[in-house]
Amino acid sequence: MSIFLQVEGVSSGSPPVTNQQLPSPAESLLLASLKLSTAASASLISSASPESTSDFRYLRFLRGYDSDVQKASQAYEEMVQWHLENDVSAISTELRSHPILPFPYALPKFAPLVAALGSPSCLLRSFSTFDSNLNLLTSVSVGLYDLRKIVASNLQDLLITSNIYLDVYFSILLDNLSVKNNRLVQRHDLLCCTNPSIGLFQFTPSTLSLIRKIGANSKHFPESISKITSCGNNIVAVGLWKIIRPFVPKHTTEKIRVLGMDYKDILKEDCEEEALIQFECYT
Image 1 (cartoon, rainbow, N blue to C red):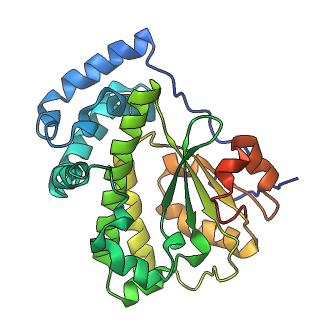
Image 2 (cartoon, one colour):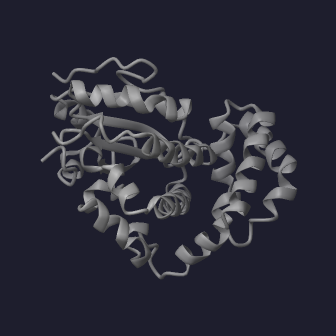
Image 3 (tube, helix red, strand yellow):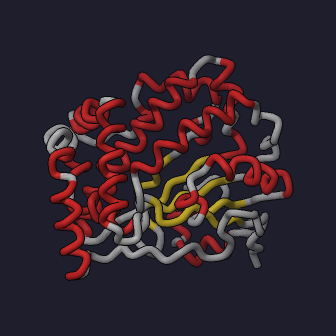
């Protein structure tokens, strides 16, 4: 039986249940109020980035801030400002210009990142398959994700840019899937921590600063992730979680399950084996 590991500040066992249903009548009234209060800001990005002003995007903000319209409105306004500062509309337009929505790391501009890390599995991947709750499965091999290589190659800015592309990619994809399935589709991220090369020494001041910058953007995409399952954690990996936890937003850490070395049965409770065979930690 798999062991749920206790890491201070990180969920163990099952993460909070996420509401993926369509809005209730009460929520619909709150959504109308949220849209009205942010209409002026939304108009600045709606034409070039329709996924940022969709009904489901508003629903993510409302539920991400516990149905508090004032807090959700403030967060949405901050998202629009971030959107404008980082020219996210241009990124959205670029991705939408392709006949098939391209995964960002397949774009030539990000080839140096893949080359620097030495393996595509170091970077977040999408399976195009789902868990039992219709969450889109993604994976990343944390054990191979050595940020020192990024710093040594002076690719910090490119990594941050690639993460914005990823955020926009999943924002578009999840919105399309939500419309198609008539429910709030989210991600289930699988983290593979079994590689023995994972270590604590890569977390230098420069790499921790990079983690902080990357993590800061996630607040602009509330309720995009339903759960994060970290697999194959030994004592070293648990030490890693303790180091990076302060740099990860609280709304993210609440969704993390940290599993020990015997985790496959737990994964099969969430996912069909056909979906898991693509996950490097499962094979």
